[in-house]
Amino acid sequence: MDDKAKLRESFEKAAAKNAPKPPYFKHGFAAFTVGGGICVFAQFLINTFQSFGMTYSEASATETIVVIFITGLLTALGLFDRIGRVAGAGTFVPITGFANSIVSSAIEFKAEGWIFGLGGNMFKVAGPVLVYGITSSWVVGIVYYLYLLVA
Image (cartoon, rainbow, N blue to C red):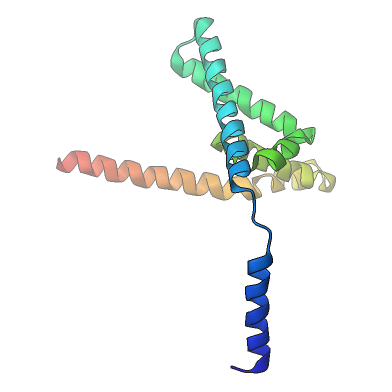
């Protein structure tokens, strides 16, 4: 090992030893609290919609639409990013994280125009998720169907 490699190795060890430790408990608590709060809010919406006479399926679909709308609105106003800085992974509850990624991409490319900027670029993030999500659901469905035929 030459002198440069030894010096680099000793520097990396010293840097790792003296690096500040992230507050894991604080971050975990914030993620758990905010993510749980989003889920509690979603369940509150479902219960409220059911009290108006909707079935569980109708209430669940309506709740999903409302949560996506609220996330999109908060993202457009720049508030969702502030919540994300505090809550970290807690804001990535699947529906809110997906809605945030689509709206953020749309806002980022808005200056390029409505069609090629906003319309074309908002699916850069969503496109692969949709393609792989739909493809994997087909594969799982076919495997399950074949399993039922054999069993």
